[in-house]
Image (tube, rainbow, N blue to C red):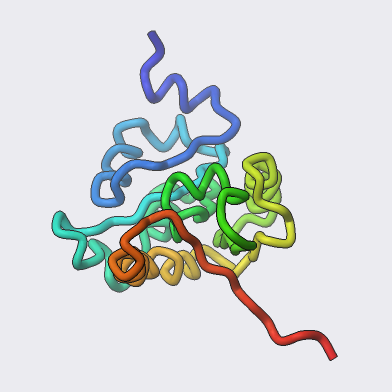
Length: 166
């Protein structure tokens, strides 16, 4: 059976869906050479054990991964929603938005195509900029927890609504 390093070395795309408090350590165990040049889609968020604080309040997991592995293009996405919405956005009552953050334009294009395959239309995808914008996505986790408490459910998402064009 192939280990994580061997599997990563042969992958075209990797997805980090590990708890954000252990993600960088786990990726280090795989090794930078195995990750170099491979698109890493990061959906993790680091939260305290009681889900009341971020483990990276002045940064983001996406930024930390990109800094630790500069030869690995990192795209942060899908972390503003529950896992059931990630793979079935059409299960919601209306349209919603999925965000993309990353420094590599080609990596974001590939991620966008993969999101389309999951059911996210191109019009629902919003590129919000470089990897530093991953902070906003990840920091939304605390609001997500509050909304989930208010709704009594985790299966929801947000939609960016703009003013009609003149």
